[in-house]
Image (cartoon, rainbow, N blue to C red; front, side, top):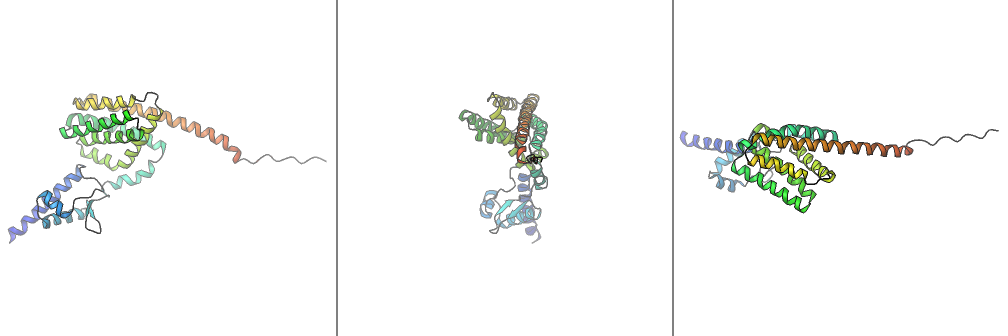
Length: 264
């Protein structure tokens, strides 16, 4: 009896460890819905009671949640501690520039690690994301250009195989995706040479594909520094325009001079 009761417990732990590792590696992300219990047990080739015990363990750890129908989801609380307070903080032009300064450091490191460590699967994903960016440029679709830009950078984070870096950036994903999206639109619309950013991304892509970490780091750093300078120029121009508008609108706030009473 004891051997029969121990085996399912060990199997449940193994299932829980497997799913936990997928969450740790970023393969399963906050908010994603898992397969149904029946489908998941068939996919993992395990019994439903063992799977249920594993899911209960992960729910107890706060890694999974369930809805009213009992469907399991990766908990949205994963990474929330860092993510939520910063969402409000980063919703200013000044803070977005701070995010870009952070990215100039992290992007260079991630690109270097990706050049060294990317698996064939990682490289295929990076290639697909870069090709999507090329297609968006051919179509001159600014919305799709911004989206494909963000996807390209996140593929590099994943290919870095640095779990701390990946989860730090994942925890800031809402901010970063917004930051990449907004900056990409601004930079694309304001740059006189529209293809210069694509060329910068191509340099990063080619260095990673060539497995050259030094070139990948330099290409990523150069790309972010150029983007940061352009964004600062845009921000300064917007501040000057706002100041000019405020001066023009002063008449809405200032009382007209009093008329002098006629002297008798």
